[in-house]
Length: 341
Image 1 (cartoon, rainbow, N blue to C red):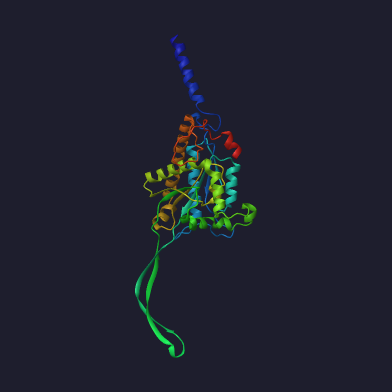
Image 2: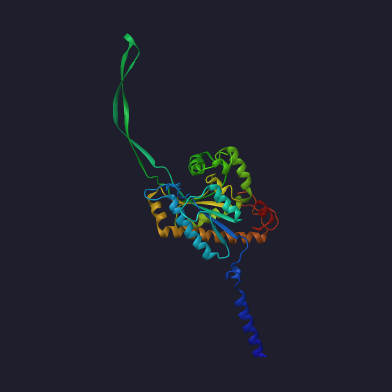
């Protein structure tokens, strides 16, 4: 009887060990979460066919190159940490991919999450100092009433220094703000210059208030999840000592945040215009650290999704306060989202 009991125990133990792994790619059963099936990684900008760059330029490097390097690190880590998730790259090479096509790739692959990698830039700081005065002569009146007038005009020496802005910030698509107009125009410039612009995007102005208002309505259902993931990303950056510039809203990269039918974020990994940040962004250690932070944030996001899916909280709610609203059990594969895709 004792031998039979021991034998049964050994068989049961072996069976548990054997079946704790799925047949699908030898993925551990406890790793097969169902909330995030496909994650899309978008490396911002890219080289043009003539060899030029679309993104911002630092003192010795380009945004396009950094975005691709960080994205490749991120893809590697995500595949290692989440083998159950299918990773899709919108720009797997150095070549530029049109913004409309990036959104199409994400939607065609039925992405559950969209992470766009970018690099920030800030204009140089302008300075001036008074160096003296110059006597300027002019005349007033005509004929006998003509008079000579002299005046002293201040003279200035002007110069610029690198903008001290540094650190990371993560964006979700949101309402247009006046202070974002310059940034929005810069980020959308490459989109406006694409060939067959009207054929790909229609007769729209991506910076027009009317278009932005309509786009905001379409993205409300993903607002809370996008904002939550963005917050997790910034938390991870803060933990490793990066300057946390917080989660922000803007209609920048309009077609990779607004046109993707899934929660989407745009990570500004640092300022290429800042010498310290540029060095960090171009270093192997810096690129790996950025990718590690985002990977940990994705893990936290999945845990958060699973927790609230069990409680039945509506994560489609379009409020930024995080308050709960009654709803049926949330699932990333619910019928509404399937139809939206």
